[in-house]
Each structure stands twice: as structure tokens, then as C-alpha cells.
Figure 1 (cartoon, helix red, strand yellow):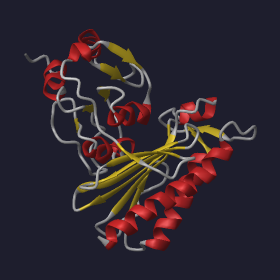
Figure 2 (cartoon, one colour; figure 1 turned 180 degrees about the horizontal axis):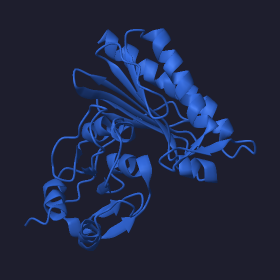
Figure 3 (cartoon, rainbow, N blue to C red; figure 1 turned 45 degrees about the horizontal axis):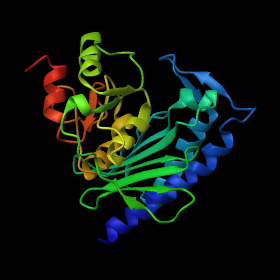
Figure 4 (cartoon, one colour; figure 1 turned 90 degrees about the horizontal axis):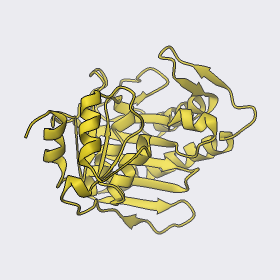
Length: 264
């Protein structure tokens, strides 16, 4: 229990520190943006947040490992912190407030803790295995528990995604045709909205470990289900290929997986 409290307090501290760096750089006139080899943008805020969080983790838990989007893995102990310093960098550099810092903790081959902090939206979501999923307004110290929706039919479901890039068109069309409403809320926000019960299905065709690690415990502890499109468990090792990612309120999961795999 002591370790649970320590980890939860520490991840909140990490998020506070990340927000203090990233938010002042949002819409900054001197923001420095470069292009990575995969042609995606990266800003000075991405580098600054990850650098600082790595330093804090090393100081607090010197035997823990760290995986981040922008720098090489630091491998030491069995516990591993997984960081996406700014998820939604394209939004960040264009002045769209849908971006966040994602932090997860992997222990014993399982993602046990996840936190998403979106300071420009004024919201933070977190969960720890066995302790529920929570959301708070950054101006309010009273977090509230999250619960996925009770929608039981795809025809009544609201579906969110980021964009159509990377999708198998037949799979995307099948989900779009089967659901009541479709919106591209995008990136982490699709999946945290699902955990809140605001939408019922969220999916991405390809994500890296640092993109989804923090989201899995949040969705699962809120009562939802998160897997690959084929229904298999998501990999938690950084050397795996980028998997597909689908989250539902649980009731809709098997039907969605069947639909994505052209099964009845």
C-alpha cells in the first residue's frame, strides 16, 4: 500500500512538472519545431518535458527503467516508466488544445498505472490497477470516478478516432456504417472520453507503446476493454511492432472485433 501511495503521488508530481513546462510553450511565438525521420513534428517542449521527467524519475527511483518517445531507453530494473511527453504534437504546434503528457508504469510485465494530463483542456485522467479510474479538473482538487457507458448496441454507439491515415478502408467503413455517430476527437482524447462514458468506441490502426500504455489502465479500470483489432492483448514490450488499438465499453467489444475481422 505504501508503494501504491508513493507511485500515485509521484506520477501526479511528474504531471505537474510536465504541465509547468509544456503549457507556457503552447502558442509561444519562439516555439522551435523540427521534423523527425518519420516526418512527424517535434517541438522544444517535447524534448524539455521528457528530459525533465527522466531526471525526476532517476532521482526518485534510480533503479527503474525509462522508455520515452524522444530519447533512447534507459534500462535498469524491472519497473519501467513509459513517457509520451506531448501526445498530439501536431495539435500543440498549431495551437489546438488537444494534447497531453502520457505517463505509465510497467511492473512484472503489466501496465499497472496510467496518467494523462491535458493542461490546455484543464483536465487530468489517471488509474491504477485495482484502484479505479479518476478524472479531475486542474482547477479543482476533487477528482471523480469514471465509468464507461452502458450502451449495448453498435447502432446506438458513438465512435471516435484520430484520422483515416493507416486504416484499412474496409475496416473503417464497417465501423462507420455500424455506429450511430462518428467524430475525430483524436489522439488520447478519444480514449479518455470513452473512459468517462461520453463515447462508446475508440480505435486507432497503429500506435507505439508510449501512445497507449497510459491509456490501458484508465480504460480498463473504468470498466472498459482495450485490445488489438484482432482481440488479442496489447503488447507491453517496446520491441514489438506498432499494434492496432481498440477500446470499447466492454459490452460492444466482441461485436466490434468481429466487425473489424469480417466475422459474424
